Length: 505
Image 1 (cartoon, rainbow, N blue to C red):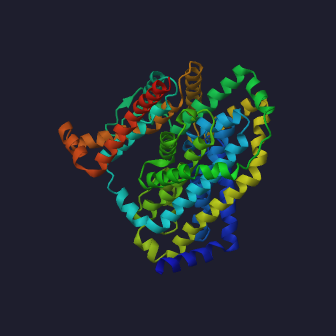
Image 2 (image 1 turned 135 degrees about the horizontal axis):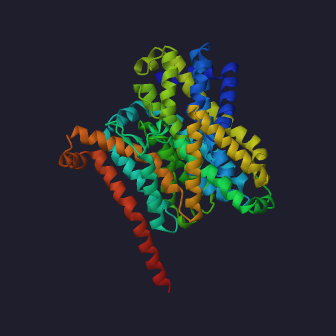
Image 3 (image 1 turned 45 degrees about the vertical axis):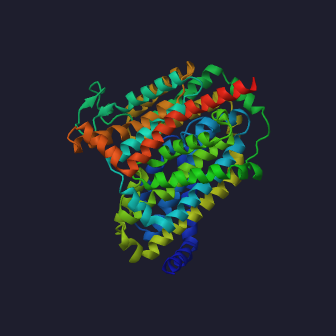
């Protein structure tokens, strides 16, 4: 009854007109921030924290939470329309979203993305309300060993993202791992591959790499095609934003699975929406009846990614609000917003400041509802960007990429890094090397390296002790089983396909 009373109180405060208005403005602004390459959810929340100083604590948190939710969804817009993920969380959305755009189904992809985003975010917020303390306690059990295995499990997804050539996929993954090692070693402080350039001391930021790989390479690709591809799409079928109800209903299992994955990954500190997006996409492909269609432009791939990355929004708040442990970079900034308002995470937040806490949590439902409405009402017009000739679109993409790259750290060096990554992506794409593995390796490489280094330090560089830890702890054993299963699944599927072809012939 106590929880029910607190929720009723939260709804009463969240339904006040000024809080609803703030949630709407935050969701709308978040969509714009997420849709522009380089302007991440983290940046949007960080820039708005000073704005919340003079607000009531609940109202300020509502604004930050709405921007967070809107930006994670907004990243899918540019990913689908111009093959440029607005945020790292939308990297996996590119694979099928842009292919649907090329087939004249941009509206269907956008509609599916907003529905899946809403479902994933709604599910994770319900979980946040009901099972926050148990999930937060479970996330505390993840130490360096568990994080290392989690990163390795994520890297095994390369096997399913390799495309037609496993060798090229593995080469792309290795290139991504090499790029991720640029900069200072996380524990020793030793500089690697920096060439005495201060711009490389902290490595290549993930968003810089993603903008270069997906955005700049796309500009070069469009320039090479001289607008032919855009012309084909412009004369394609009529754009419809609303996907058919039956299409979405048939994908309910995929949406639920990805929502669960996103919520769990979000509750694990340091994992992030980008990892959840790839995991959701990979598991959808693994369970699909037609995995060979993934990457060719199917709605299932879009909703799998979007439900997972939006599931992180609620999941990442679980350890933040209950234990003061940020689930990702955005919630790390949100933690600063809480402390500035004089709010300390933990049981005190749920007992002494329950009115503020539950108003904030309940407002997430309204923020997600607002971007769902905005998605169906506004994206009918945004989707017509596919009709813009490449001669106009390419310079716009390039300008946005340059501005976004510069805005991250106000550094011209980041713009040069983005352009270099763009040339790398263009070269790989020209010779049919998949970009997904290199993107995944850049994201997961630092997570695996830093946690392996910590595990070795804890074991005094004794590999036997680390092995004993792996085989004696339940979470590690589960992750090891998942790693083996992920590595074996492509071989098993190939064996089954060969067996079926043999029986047919």
